[in-house]
Length: 85
Image (cartoon, rainbow, N blue to C red; front, side, top):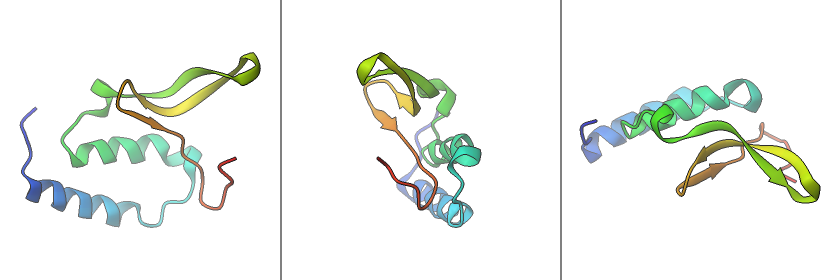
């Protein structure tokens, strides 16, 4: 994996923003969104992060984190207009 210049990252980020500006449906788009997001930086998402990582919630319930990169990032994404509670 070669290192990208800041200019290349800016170009990729701008394209990403244009491609995703109208996205609103979380369940159907999360994985594509984050695969494209990681590509901004030239990072293959499959090498660093997992989707739907199982977690234990309070009260011994099972839950899932939308995207998990151990020691770096936790993502819980919702559709536009949906409560985060």
